[in-house]
Structure formats: C-alpha cells, structure tokens
Length: 125
Image 1 (tube, rainbow, N blue to C red):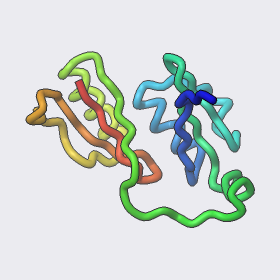
Image 2: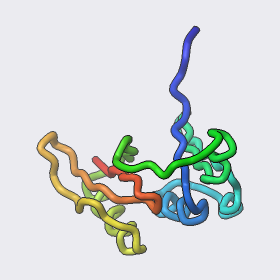
Image 3: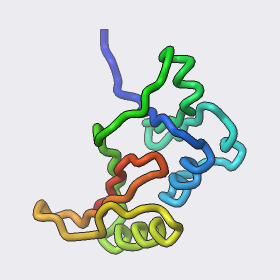
C-alpha cells in the first residue's frame, strides 16, 4: 500500500480572519469562502486546508486549544527582496511579525510572521 502526502489542515478560530491573512500572504482564496467551515487551497499538487474549530469539534469529538509551536509552514518567495516586501506588507496590515527579515547563517533570507491563530509562518528565499 502506497501513500502520498497531500494536505496540511489548519484549525482556525475565525475563518474570515484566517483567510484574510493568507490572502495577504498571496494565496488566491475567494471571498465566498469566508463563511465555510472547510476551505481548501490547491497549489502545485498540494492542498492547504482550513477548518473551523466548530467543525473540528464535531469530527474529533472535542477540541482543546493547543499550546506551543508544533509545526512550521514555510513559503518560498521569488527573491530576497520579496521576503522583505512580503514581511512589510503583512505587518503593515496589522499582523504580528515574529522575527524581522535577516540573512540566516545557512544562506537564506528569512522572516517569520504569525497568522491570526498564532501559527508561525516562515518566509524565505
């Protein structure tokens, strides 16, 4: 039996707020998805899904707010300058910057922002 990694799901408190953040990040998500309990965005054969806490409570049989950083979502930008520009665009819209752009010792331009649910999102080139 073979398997294929296909999707990452993010549990969100407020679908509209979460989707607005990921739109600023650059994902194409229709406004009509704002009230849906489940939203998927396909990109290069991979899916990023968003599920409301209410829907997850039904699926899991409950929900406890997680604590601590468990996974990282990392988005490849076109250039070093694009990392800086995207970080600035995100933070200018009121989202929290976790770490401003810097030149990492491993050679990448890197920055970290937070989505509305506190997930750390890495930007790099």
